[in-house]
Image (cartoon, rainbow, N blue to C red; front, top):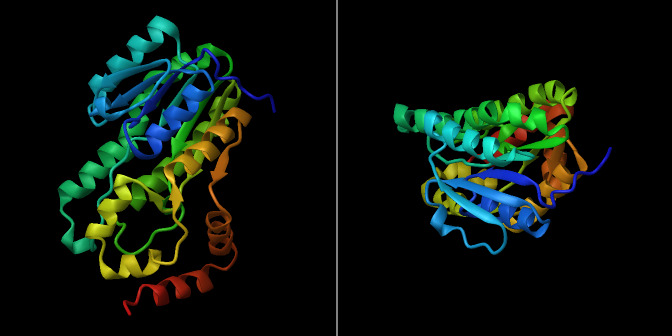
Length: 258
């Protein structure tokens, strides 16, 4: 598969002002891309190079569509990275309907709307990339993730569908499954997660946002579909697929607070 050079190419990154998104933007700048960061607070992004900041909330479909179309009309779009996301964690009956609505609007619809706006420009580019940030929680649900995990499962399914549709138009889709990553979102989880959630995730390997971004962008350059950031994440998916009953028993055992 032919690698894509990002040098001089216009690329959009949502949620690019902190965490994984900021590191993705930094990696793309390093490769010479003209990066547009879409974020609620873009001023937090500290980057050198060809970067334009756009203050927009991806949960506002009209606003994000207008920004993406303006970029596309002005210079085209060679790649779109949908990274924006929020975390709501807690026991199911302790979460509000607003918690579920907020995660759905940001994590899933906040990726869908940018893709709908960018898709014609990605097709017109002839050879382009669409990157989606899912999660290990995008293929396994755990205690406390009833608001978060379903949105990441949806991202995984969307990526699988778009992978097939994009091929004929030269659009290569890449979906990354980050494990626990040292970001503001993980700090939020540490503060608010139930004991059962903390028990399950306590032994998991933590990665830096930079490590995740480097693996992801490398996968986009190559046109790879799935990107696992460490052996643990890949093994977890295989284990669940091959031995689901054993997997669920172990997960239930881990969830018992000690």
